[in-house]
Amino acid sequence: MENGCCMLGIVFSVICIISFIWSIFAGTTPEISAAVLDGAGRAVSVTLSLIGAMSLWNGVMEVLREAGAITRLSALLSPLMKLIFPETSRTKKGLDSAVACIAANLLGIGNAATPLAISALNEMQSSQPEPERASDDAVTLTVLNTASFSVIPTTVLALRRAAGASVMFALLPKIWLCGLIGTLTALVSSKLVCRAFRR
Picture (cartoon, rainbow, N blue to C red):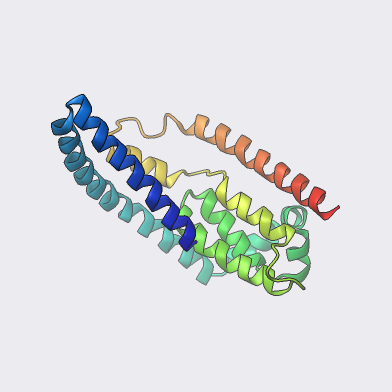
């Protein structure tokens, strides 16, 4: 994780340096300076607008979990979970966290889904004979958490609102279609790759 963050910082630094050097030769340094200041201001306002939406849905997820709704949802989705996470469904280790992660992704709150996915992965790996090697279920959950289908794309809607979009839900059918295709493709690919490596 630290190496990934370091590499990301290097990439962004290189992009910024190249942009600044290019602006000197192109004579657009004043425009670059104005864009940097405007972008910083917009970043703060967008972040503040996202805090409300994220806080709301994180709170909703925590209330559902404390109320036992996640456990009931896990029982309701048991046939589907057996198909997606066969080993985890058998051992029950990490199953509730995995279901909570999927539920958070369905609500479009990836910020809440990520810690739930990490918790589920830790529990899944604890029952493995080789904990340092990712199990098939762990790989599948990681892929699903990354390429997740959202019924309510909270983050997208909050960003559109912050950007001043007047029509909030016009893109929902397209988001659903793209999300469904992406999730199914990721799930099938994950299963095929895991099976190939197992052989």
